[in-house]
Length: 297
Image (cartoon, rainbow, N blue to C red):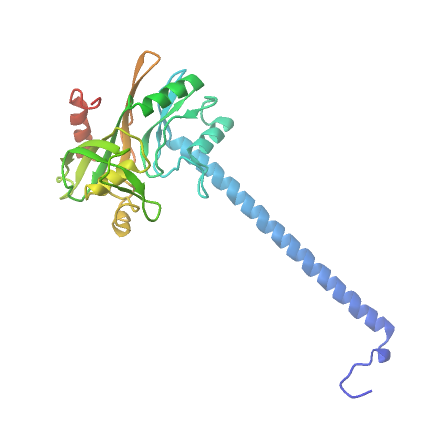
């Protein structure tokens, strides 16, 4: 046979068998190690997800404040940064509530019926019905504008006007945003007043926003239409400016309504955000609170 070619007929049978056996053993070992490695990675990932979920629920439980509780409804102070609906990063308010109740870290309130929503960046009063009839009545009250809502927001930009009404239809824009139109066929309506907080920072203002309708991103769009986007709002303001702040400064402050003949007043003092904790902000809220009829107008 030509030089350089391997003549299998010249190899001892035992040597060939040993080489094949060694190859099989090595291959099986490699496959086994790979399977074990994959299994370990899967276990670690599952463990991380479980721990992250438990931490998420625990953090939610520690931040949540029950503001009002009765046989018909319950109101809580939603922490900033938690979306209402589940997404890739969070189980959302409803999912976290169910898990916390199932695990006993929150009271067993039973079935909760959401009657309105808050954006992930918004903190404050979030209302749930505990009965189907209460859910129906509250839904109708929201639709008929019989529920009085008051939000507070901060902005460092000069508004086109310091108080009044913001009125206009809304339509979808780019990057998941909305914009305000001049038309008024089915308008978003927001009344507001504002006050200077120049003692904290030149140009800083606090706004009391009273939405009469409940459209997606309504208050964030309204503030942008004034030329004064909410402080920390990367979606409707400049993202590089938003990064300077520890949160989006929009908070659902008060909610008042009648239900089954009872007047319900719910207040959630803002407790997240360094600026919301300033004495000047608290003083402004106290002054507005003392104005008779301002909250229910």
